[in-house]
Image 1: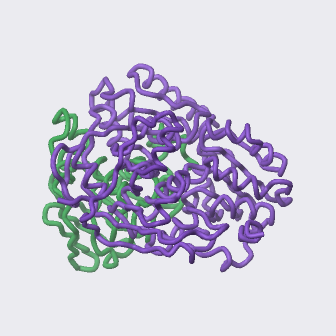
Image 2: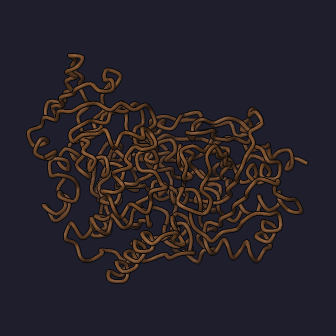
Image 3: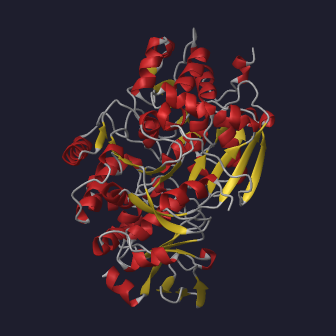
Length: 419
Length: 173
């Protein structure tokens, strides 16, 4: 039987032939949680009577959501995770190392893996050709204990990105455009498989951005076939030996196919309070902004910081606007530091914070005031997301965010990038 | 008390009606992140950003009734957990986001897919889990809900995933 990528990977991990709709208990290659979901996973692990972690070398706890800790309750939760990791041999990725999804792709996930994580954006490593999906703390606790989980093999939606994006338009715009088209539950329980000519040439950072936001359409995962670009990335991470070619069979059966004509996509925003409330920037009225945030597991990577710094070079953030920049990992931070990118940010008036989730989750490092408007490169703009239900979040690419921080309102980056 | 009712397969309570796209940020807001290690305290803020009075009004056995795509967003299991701690007997919606749905079953909170347009705020509902029927006693109409997948029925019947795993020393699905 010809298979989709999801059918292939799940069959391999179940040890039997499976097709969409089948349910199986499968081996999990990588299991992770973060400081928001890890403490409950640990207490569930103990409640089930387990004392050892099955695969400690690929079981990780990430301290990234509230790192460094802003209050004692969270400091205590962090210590609980450190103690548990230390006593079981599981990995701990501590304050300043970076966001779980970024560290997973830098150091842990290989093409063809099954990855389960206590964080909805665990779909991110799909960009490497892995089947990666988010779950709750109890599922993850079981994963730590048994290195197993149960899965229903999803139906797959094939998305073909055809043609090329125009200058000033990025992977973030493309995924917001796609979600705007199919809505926030258009892919619920389904997997995306990304293909088409543009997909094959898209750089790895762009693929991470797109896979990261698969869940914003309700999808279980969003997978790119692995190819030379995947191999180059893994090799640069010192992990070239874990490369495998992962691709769908020619006769794979898809639930449906969606064709996206890339050249028509413009710089996009998601307007409050849902990601599918999408609109091209040039169709917006003048939206004044109070805060701009460049970072997160969606857009805190090196190429994101680089394009933002190119726009900000020699310019100043508009008076009255706060620009916050958070690199997604320590490696990205160091590279941006060495290349003068962080200096550009600071000179422009930005605040550069330590690697982690930053203000995206509404805990610290940039909570919004009443009535305030934030333009962010994160993946989600739900009411209350950034710490205040009386504030308004727009989502965009790093280029749109950087240019808007200079203008003081949401502005089209083609004004500067097409010059 | 809730699990006793669940054993009989009949749940009875009042409806609290919410709209479409009730996110986990509305159910368990990130600004209370520090309370995740203190679930009874976090439960005092359940659904606060959708209805600030909800936690005060809800009584044990009441139902949360949503529209389309209930529970979208984060993987935080705390969302169904604090609904359960607050006394919610089941959550009904036209459709659920995947992770919330799975988490609800895992923590033993029935999540039922049915036509919630036929339910208004304050309606008295009697839910027969075995027969798959929501009896809207206020409106005197019966609404069918979609049966759960077999694996989820097993997990729910065991009292949630942790109990299922403890009882079987692993998966027995």
